[in-house]
Length: 290
Ligand code: AMP
Image (cartoon, rainbow, N blue to C red):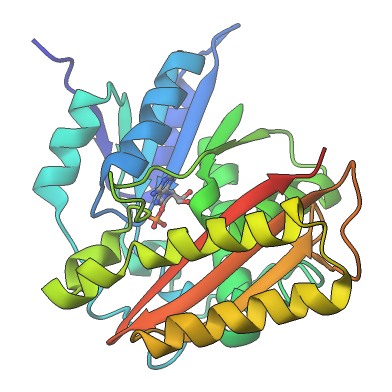
């Protein structure tokens, strides 16, 4: 018989629960999500369960991280299924606040990281990372976890939040979990269900192309001018077969700096955002150049 979990529907309930729970030496792990859970989320939950004594899952579709014209209204909701997955993964507490509870009338405080939030998704989704950062800081304050678990599928989000945790001296550890993929390489995403059959067939080409670029740049030890040439040629290839590429960039980690030349001992992020029809997909690979 699986252990039932506690559901907290309001910030007040969550604060009262957190004040009442005495952890002693026990560790509290936290997995923030927007719901419509899949195996990528389950991997975060299972890792949290392995590493901690209590696991809190939050499900909240955060309006402030969607820009105008994006899919906030259409974002998939699957609460019954999510709760089943939560139970299977051994979640102890599910936090399910409402929009009005998180952002009451006259809400006016936002957190903004100024450097890592600028490139990649930041360039095309104005206010996105400030929306993410704000809701996460609120959740960190409410839940007070020892460790929060994030997927490296959203690598920029992980590095932005890590920088905020460092800059603001937040007392928690962040753990980045490798991207969980379908057998054909497509990164799991709540938005994959919106792909038409034809687009679903095309979608694995994203990860294939990232791997080809990695080989070309890091095995051929390409010069900076040819880094750009390799990326441009991949954009061309993807667009020819039906993708609309929003960005395809190689940046240096952990601060997402522009790359002039690759050099041994550094770690790089190769990141892409594309549209297939109306569905926006992102993916990346992290490359340790050793
Ligand atoms: P979301 O519900 O899309 O906001 O995602 C919640 C968390 O799950 C984030 O930390 C994501 O990076 C992570 N996540 C989403 N998809 C995957 C995946 N395919 N593999 C690993 N983590 C993921």
